[in-house]
Length: 305
Image (cartoon, rainbow, N blue to C red; front, side):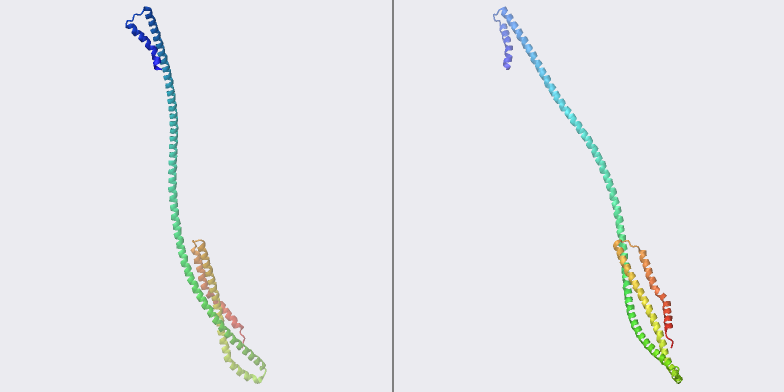
C-alpha cells in the first residue's frame, strides 16, 4: 500500500531528471511535463494536507478520547477519594466516640470496683460481727445448758426427798389415825362412864395415864405440822423448779430459733430472762407466811382431848 501511494510522486521526478539530463524533447512536451508535474505536486500537496488534516483530526479525536478517559478516571478517583475521605472522617469520629465511651466505661468500671470493694469490706465486717455474736450465743447457750443440768439434778433430788417425805407422811398419818381411833374410843368410854360416880377415881387415874399419850399426841401433832409445812415448802419449790426448767427449755428453743432465723439476737432479752429466773429463785422465801397459816389451820382442826 505504501508503494502504491509513493509511485505517482516518483514519476514527475523521473521526468524532471530526464529533462535535466538534456533529453531532446520539444517545448510542448516540456510544458506538458511541467503541467503534469505541477498537477501532480498540487495533488500531492492536497493529499498531504488532507492526510495531515485527517491525522490531526484523528489525533484530536484520540486526544479528546484520552482526555475524556483520563477525566473520567480522575473524576472517579476524586469521587473515590472523597468517599474515602468521608469514610476516614466518619471512622475518625466513630473512633473518637468509641474512645470516649471506652474512657467512660473505664471510669464507671473503676467506680463500680471501688463500690464493690467497699461493700465487700462491709460484708466481711458484718460476717465477723455475726460470727462473734454466734460465739457469744453459743457460750451463753452452753452456760445455760450447764445451769439447766444443775437444775435438773436439783429437781431429781427434790423429787426423791418428796417421795421420802410422802412415805414418812403416810406412816405418820397412819399413826395419827390409830391415835385418833384410840382417842375416840376413850372418849366413848369416858362418856359411857361419866355419869357413874364410882368411876371418878378410875377416870382420874385414866386421865393421869392419858397425860403421857396426850403429850405424845401433841408432840406428834407438832411433828406432823412441821412435816406438812416442809411438804408444802418442798412442793412449792418443786413447782418453781419445774417452772424454771420449762422457762429455760422455752428460752433455749427460742434462742435456737432466733439463731437459725437471724444471727443478730438482742442480748438485753437474755438479761431480762436471767433477772426473771433470779427473781423466781428468790421467791420461795415468800411462802413462809402461807406455811404458818397452814400450820394454824392444822392446829385449829385438831380435836380437843
